[in-house]
Length: 366
Image (tube, rainbow, N blue to C red):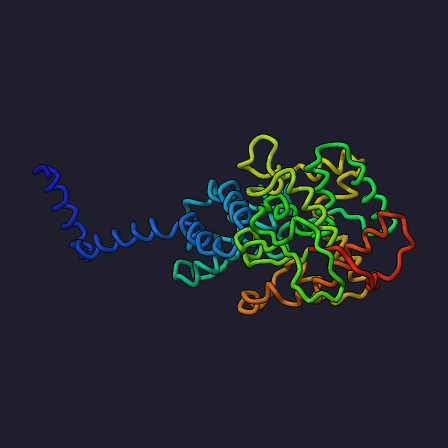
């Protein structure tokens, strides 16, 4: 330190003393404030919250949340102290999302804000959640349910159209498998052969066979709710998988990308195939197969807990959710086979009988 700098600091200290301020205490307070600025910015707290929460999200879900934070919030309020942010500042950021034509995204981001502020309060870096004051301040989000076909006759038309699909054989089989398993499109696209248990060759047994049956076990890291999911495989689903195995087996992705087997099928492939069959996005989507199954199974009298568990919808009881991936499995296995038989009846233009009626004959299953 030069002599002139030392004299300057001495004079500044004398001025503080004259005003009744302890220079040493002032330095400590400034250092503490600087530390608070470094550890209490909105971006730092938000990233900390995301890192903790992402452990229970599927990879794609966690990346989507982070991408929205980086796109819509960090550039505007990321450097601000989270303790000092106000409701009007948050509303301004959300309204900018609305102005870009994304009202639903604005509501999603508002939910993230609430969770981030609650985390900040719990870690002593905020006193309250200003986003709570924004209730009713945003344009109501559109009620966008995924387009789906639920009329049985039209479902039969769709299934016959899928059978006649003239594009890629891999895509045709993906379309055939989708209604039989009604998982989320991303879960289907990312399926890997090691997740499946079934025999490559048909094994003739009776319907009273007590074996557990073929299954698809989707690991927790690929599921939206972060828990393993079991999909019982019907006879029809196994037949499709055998065809697929001859194309993409025995390891890696069940539905590899046309460009590289190291990547799975594009997220737009299923919807693009439906468009090529003449179905608009207002009529049917890849996600719509889930709504189709849910609607018809409920209408046919199946127990809601079986259907919801098969759809892998979240369980509000986190402890119970950790162990319920096999819940109602015997009943779900029966339901999935009856559902596949029902779809066959629709596709074959048969007289549709009650879905709960099983054919009491020997079946070839694996």
